[in-house]
Length: 518
Image 1 (tube, rainbow, N blue to C red):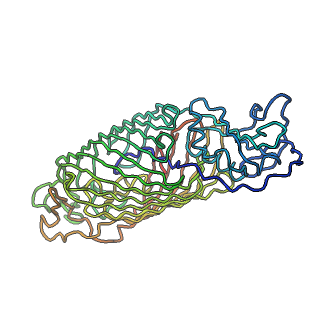
Image 2 (image 1 turned 180 degrees about the vertical axis):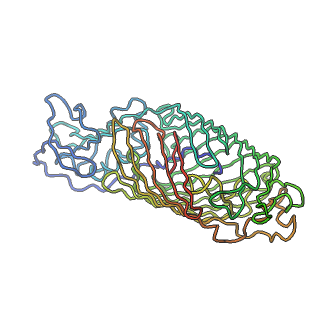
Image 3 (image 1 turned 90 degrees about the vertical axis):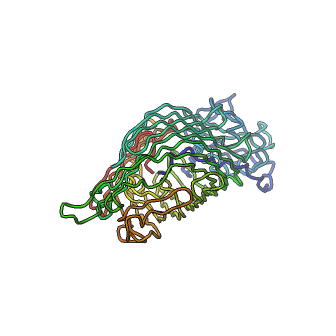
């Protein structure tokens, strides 16, 4: 992976405009008995409100949405926030996106509940309403009960996949100052990548549609390049350590609640150490090459050290809801990253990425998720090339294949097994497919034929790396696993996957604690 993933910018935009107001109900309408029903349209049940108490003072089941005949269709004249102990009431009101003057409808109530749960700050959301003036017809008071999660946590993290395993410690606060601001610190040491990463995100500056993020990174990558023709038992041809340090600043705007754009300036320095090369030939001299011999008796490192300063333009639509880890809706992302020589980068380069997913929700907690992605890179630096394998292409070793272009797809089905005291256990079945390749490489006709000069640096490609699409460019994996979630905790708890790589005819397994495999 190119870098650890910080929390994505929130998709919270400006509150929706006022809805058209239907005609007021007749003044002689008799109030109906208060009733409750679930957000998924379950059976209506009558409840009793003790004398001298209002509806927001009654203990209701978790996830309750209340309705009475006099409330639906009336104007909301007040929004009251209750049960929030950590999150500022104005922040809850902004996230909910509902305000006086709107018409109370069942669709609006369901949408508000999903907004509050999707942001990840609240373990339970209860929505009730009552007449603004008892016995009158002056509209309704909407009562939003938002019970906070534990907003910060210090937790161990650990992951395992063939070629990369290790762990570390994470501190995450998803609700700094009670205003939905995010702060993250991760320290990790693994066999393939060790880093210290810090990030601060304000997803809505002063409750506006603008957001920003600052982050800093110190990282060491131990990058292994593998010989061709050994899918099931890969052989290492060259290893290179790349040390990276730097910082970045991102600013963006939410055009709507779901549609956003941001620009990121990254200032990084890469120190590329001398590589080690290996002879992967068989005893009779056949098979993949002796890299040192093929390169004229020298182990050439893949690139030189230098600055990697870029602008990244990101345009995204995130219409998903996330209710207790169950997704529904569409996500589309487009990213263009420009490595600018005039900004001090070793070479000009251009990276184009497209990603989309759609999640269908069935039977309340079943998920079918389709993910599609493509990358087209032009002269990417060595460490920024497309990498395939590990948790992103299950059935392969971590970073087993490299390229400047890829097309990929994943289909997952997730179903609940059981929930006990807020701990949910779910089963997942998946199929991953990926096509990764270099579009055009020089013909390896001489020892230095694949030593390509780019700006003030170079890229040295291994002699057996194929140019163009070949059969070994396409990989498929299928399998299943388990996911463990704790409703009151902001980090994923545990995930484990078992995958069978069709081309390599081998099983791989993947474990993640404190982060996600999805």
